Length: 172
Image (cartoon, rainbow, N blue to C red; front, top):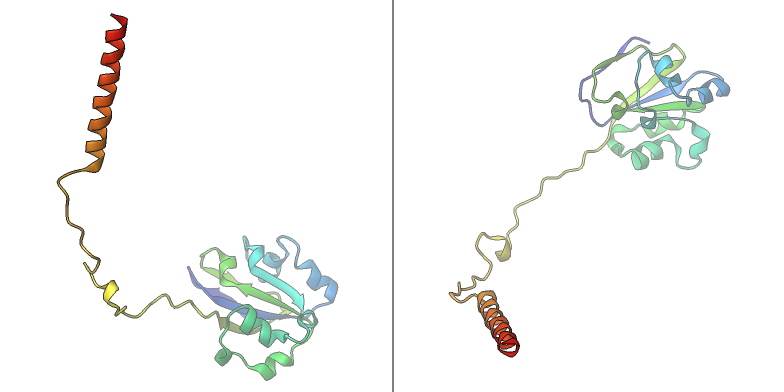
């Protein structure tokens, strides 16, 4: 397999590899740094790499795993082709590269099945057309010249002064 290029700041790309190796070798790829070695790069985030036998997916299969579990659109997936894959696979997400540009040099025992993109969340919203969404649509409250806090503070100050005056009168 030729080198695979990863663009800097790549987001939402999933690379699916078939692992043409014995189960013991595939299990070993779960160890820290092992996936780095077989992909020919350093510093991958192991939390962004899944290595498992397809049989673990049971009825869900690779199609369901990619569609329901990874958010890949059904339009991108070939259900028949994915159903024909057995053995061990590696799922490598863009986030594993920490936004770095990289050239993968995969071991010959890795066979790239496909590159898929996760559906991005659409954060755009339409225009809100309700009356309450219009600027300055809240009821306007008249500005009062009298501030109830100031009046309450003044009353409290008078009471304290009277109390102090009363104590001084008793003492003298």
